[in-house]
Image (cartoon, rainbow, N blue to C red):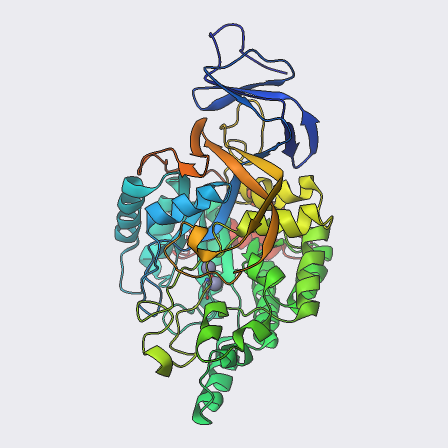
Length: 498
Ligand code: DUC
Ligand code: ZN
Ligand code: ZN
């Protein structure tokens, strides 16, 4: 193993006597850190200037949360409750050391302006490292030919597009345009897959009959809306032979569709989130407006869909576990613009989860024997790094990687209470849950970020991470039968006809 422990003086940080967990195995060894980078991993390392005894603790790669909405104006014009300070502080307390957050284009916006605005705000406030995905609402020629290639070169190597929402929705033709450019420029396309007209058609009829309570959100977003759109998205991706990543997968049928497509060789990847493992449709059926705290899109399903998501994580159909942290307060600034008269169509869409994402999965997955520690690390860090161009710098405890390390105490028991969390939402859909296992200390690039339940770093000390090509975009080979279209997207500029 390459180390430089002798030649450059003492380590800045040595973490000793812990058990390291990576996606490819575990070992008892010490970690030596210099200048924010792991430079040695072996037993019996010399003391560092900061010397930490991690006896009885797991040393896991800091989590990567590749789906967060922070300081973002939603399509409906609602501002998130968290800014880049509170959002990243909450992430750090939950064991996450890198987030990827969305820069949301609204149709009239110039893409460079959108990115510059988010970049400035994050730079001033973030306490952990961060990168951005673009939400692309207007794939016009300026965006496709000029802006996307430029931002991808600048390290924003992924973008999200929507198949629903009036103000964001792209049609199939536009999705093909976006996929073609992403294929050519090596960016990952994340898709919100729900059938817009199915939802619109059901919602209209529900509202006409006076069914406006939060629980009708779940009925309007029938599971078929997700599975149909997912199937279509996969077909579009196969047509142009460009990988796609379906975000926030909720339903059993959707998991099956993705699994079958993967078995046929389709380059489809998928994400799911805590709300689809730990919440159910019935949670939205609470007295008064309480159910609004559990409403997100797609909505959580039933026990069978929870089991399907677990199975999808277990067999690799779903490879990334993100929070989809969409923080909206339970008041007029967020969930309830019209108070108790707010209809399910007017509620802000989404649930918080940036801080509890990892503790929930550690407790219910690792501690209850549903997931190995290796699977936990893959789903929460390593696969995100590979999928979004953060590897090998992030996502593993390895010599040469950033010293992003969370020290997990498997014996620590916590009863979830919104008051202990660091976001600005004011509630959590996981209130009262008893969890076992907690990230008691967190390092980002060798800096201690969280210790003894206190934040240790300044606002603005996080760094923007310019990302490289997502792994699925490297060495792409045309799939069988789609050579013509692979050739087409390989053209220098598919829009100019050159
Ligand atoms: N999609 C998301 O990704 N997050 C919140 C709401 C939504 O529709
Ligand atoms: Zn979405
Ligand atoms: Zn989201």
